[in-house]
Length: 75
Image 1 (tube, rainbow, N blue to C red):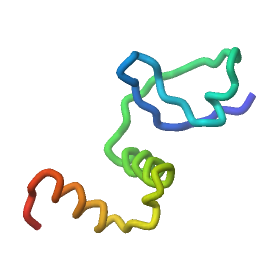
Image 2 (cartoon, rainbow, N blue to C red):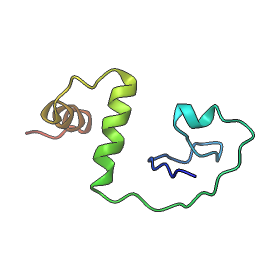
Image 3 (cartoon, rainbow, N blue to C red):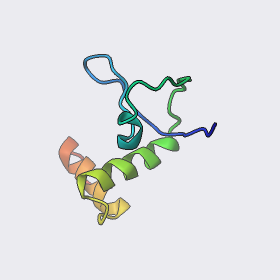
């Protein structure tokens, strides 16, 4: 048995998001342990999302600027 760690979120319908390869394993049973994400772990999560959405070419500064702009924060 091999453990796999990933960061997921609870979707609006109450289901937990899974990595694409795991989601294809329909019918298999897994033991699930839920731990709240620490602040440092959120960067790994956002990096994965950026890669999935095609934004992996952006730097941390680019992403910070986008977040600040979206919230109306002046740098």
